[in-house]
Length: 290
Image (cartoon, rainbow, N blue to C red):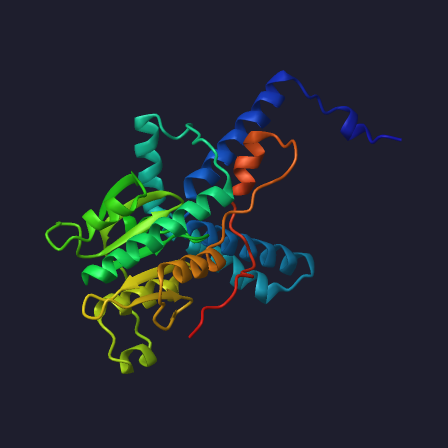
């Protein structure tokens, strides 16, 4: 028997339109925060809500009270925490770019071209004794660092990287941030590592910045010393030994730079685009040689 309360529920065209509109809004809100730390913050808020629900379910009054006040304080600070995303969303709505969809590309082709170009440029810097700092974005977004420098949104090429880090260029002082085959920004400021081990090694500011951003994100950083021409990689707060040879650098980068995982099979393109942009929870990539 179906309860009478359920038989009285009516579902019409307006209800279906309401659900579809809400789903589309939620989808584009997820696109708005993709590639930023807001994703991790949102997941943290979801965990707090789950804890609150479980505490009420099992009548844990003290824990429920604490979680209620904690969520209340968090809700007050949300506009401050998400201020960059809100500003960027309003700008994109004004420019009509929020609902645009970029063309897809094969992951293997993107990763292979990206690593080959960066390896070629790195040893061009090394031969000319030019310092360089190239940050390769992974799953954690680097938009806040891009916004600290000069946004480029330019196609990745060795010639452009050489022009950026040319000592006479106004963009050479700072880092270049690369996402897929696009140079998102140049002259970007990175956080310096405060690790005592890195300080004791008497490394320069460029190397400390490479270690610093790799400590706070999952980015892979290629750093070239201006004094010695040595090429190294920083990842997970660790700086590798000097890498000899363009081919070896290309192989190391190919092993640790993770192409985004995409859905297989005949999946709806809108759903595929949404799930492809979700962060991966587990890092199974190999460690750097040190």
